[in-house]
Amino acid sequence: MACAVLGACSSMSSSSINPVNWITPYKVDVIQGNFVSKEQVEQLRPGLSRDEVKALLGTPLMTSLFHVDRWDYVFTMKRQGVEPQSFKYTVFFKGDQLERFEGDAMPSEAEFVSKLSNQRKLGKIPPLEASEAQLKAAEKVSAARADAKPAVASESTSPQTTVYPPLESPRQ
Image 1: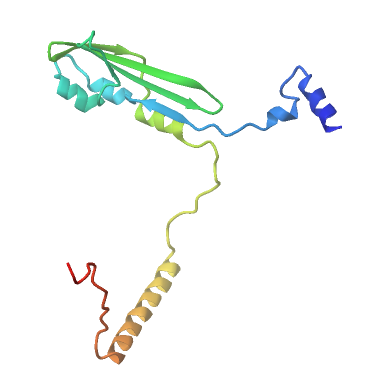
Image 2: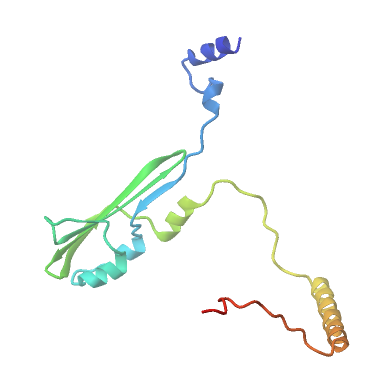
């Protein structure tokens, strides 16, 4: 009977009706490459040295022996339920100086972080503030603890010391 039901489900043309397609495995988010933000691109200007560009954008993902004066920054992001995204940015040097740069329109850091945020919302977060009554209650508790500690310390006249075994054997 179960085989007949599953066989009938697989023959339906619409995959949304098929209950087998309702269950999907979890797919891990895959983020690869060098993320270059819009703010970093705005700081680029011709005449920067290779070291300055590397300090600003990071180590390039791809460098070629055939294109010594070209660095490629590639960034890809694959998430479940979202089309894969790919960003490319290329910087060109003349000698040791940055000559020009071009590439995709890069997202700002805030836009990138918003893409990474989990879509599941856990509800309202309680405020992390204490009322006046809670602060007074906490002061009373800390004062009571402070009064109790000296009484405990006065009962013991000698401090307790802990003796541990040696880390190395005595023969060494």
